[in-house]
Amino acid sequence: MNAFQGSERLIYEYILRRGKEIGGLSAKTIAHDNFTTTTSVNRVCKKMGYASYTELRYKFTRDQALFKPIEREMSSDEPPFLNSVCELLANSGHIYLYARGATLTSLNYLSRFLSLANLPHLMLNDIHQLTCVVKGTLVLLSKSGETHSLIEMAHNAHRKGLKVLVITSRNSTLESLGTVCWPLEINRNPISLYQREGQLDLLMVVDRIGCHLLQHNAV
Image 1: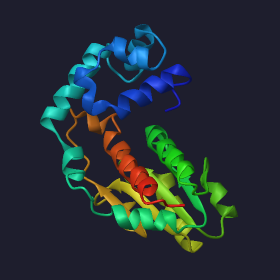
Image 2: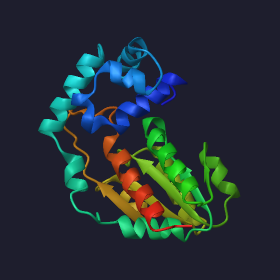
Image 3: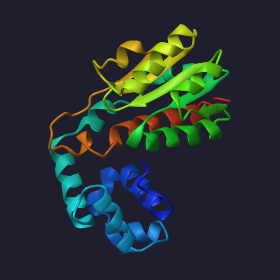
Image 4: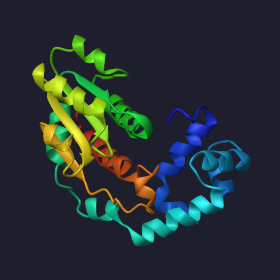
């Protein structure tokens, strides 16, 4: 998310990454773990739309009690789609990553895992960069699956003969365009954290993919 830079971005990613544990984390703990101050933690929370870290923690905890899309998606040791997604990534000579908005956080995590697994890849910043691509796999991440630029990117990739891996909402337009897809059960209740800035479902999927690639020596 472009609103966060430097230590603020570290705090933001930390909150997303440990969202399931947020009820037991104090602002002081988050500040300590990120070598910053509680003032910075509260500033990030305000940018996320909360009055303070106390409010963010309360709403995170409340939403996790009411809605549990992550647990349902990740209930088994080998989630559906995991093997096909990782096999496609491990066997792609060229991997291109693209996302927009807050989903860029999840895409950055995926990029880190690919680097650790020694899988060459490139982050695309603009849909026109795809014109230079002639082979490989395009990876698209989107919570809604209805973002125009990602849909256009998927169509262009198919026209060029590229494989398209999508991680997105079930029954979305983008899901229908994936060569391989990991469909997400996104909670669409308007009071839910997951409909706003949480992105926790995407981050958990990326964690599973990354750990699987590393554990199975995808090099």
